[in-house]
Image 1: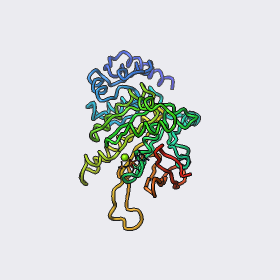
Image 2 (image 1 turned 120 degrees about the horizontal axis):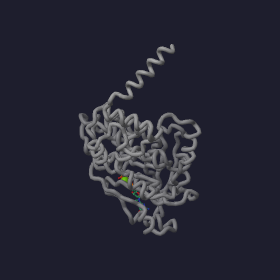
Image 3 (image 1 turned 90 degrees about the vertical axis):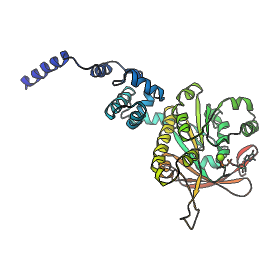
Image 4 (image 1 turned 30 degrees about the horizontal axis):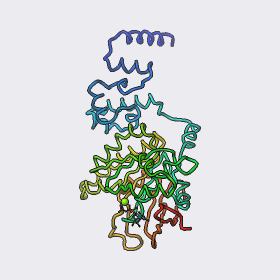
Length: 346
Ligand code: GTP
Ligand code: MG
């Protein structure tokens, strides 16, 4: 036994003096010294660093939350290197197992944005949650965008009043952002419309790639403006028009999946709420019941934490149905879209 460990010690000394490639030296160094930036990661040379930064992977967090295939694509890395870089970033951020009390701590920080309707808030467990993706799907005119506008106002309110005390990021893919309507909703709550509009940061997106890029590069604006709510209206329409036909379906779903991961990452990292809208498509194969299903298929079904199906009822009434929620009972409620904004029936 003693002999064996002596031999091991001798080997270790030999190893120490053998000249090693820079990579490994960096790796050993990184174990001693805490890594605090991307350039300190083992495997990240000057050109890789430039490519990563160019693609928006400029923080340990963005790298730690990414998949090897992403880094392979954006920085031309080999799979092994990509895995190594991601693991090192995860180690640096201590992203391994965590204990239950830490998870509880994070859950305690969850905030909820009121929708303006108490009934609707109750249906979704108290409001639209941070650290989660909430999706509304439904036909045109069902109120998806109106709900988004209302939350643009409400998210700015302090927590005690059903808000998050934060600003809003609005990705507008359908050119349906209407500041006048938001001003009307703000005024109805006794707020200064100009102040409210100043805290909404809008980006018009022109296609699905652009839409993804806006979210992939949102970190800076999120930090700078204390963003509490991110809205993507519509999440899926650009994907639907950019990927037409069966042959492109797998491609589309893969991109959509990546986009949703990026949104969930923002939600988790910055404790913010994500609200996305989705159209429905007609399903001619369904003869009975409601022949409409949300587009995005399983990818969206799995990744939105809360899914709301909205439909028109008489006059200004809308019916909201909560579907497939992991921790809340399915149910329905009725709310109204009034000139002052979303409200309860009575
Ligand atoms: P698509 O984006 O076309 O799929 O529909 P959507 O679900 O986003 O519909 P949206 O939220 O835009 O709802 C439109 C409906 O909201 C209109 O038909 C009106 O009933 C109502 N609405 C829109 N603007 C106003 C407004 O300024 N005042 C009031 N009282 N109601 C409005
Ligand atoms: Mg809309």
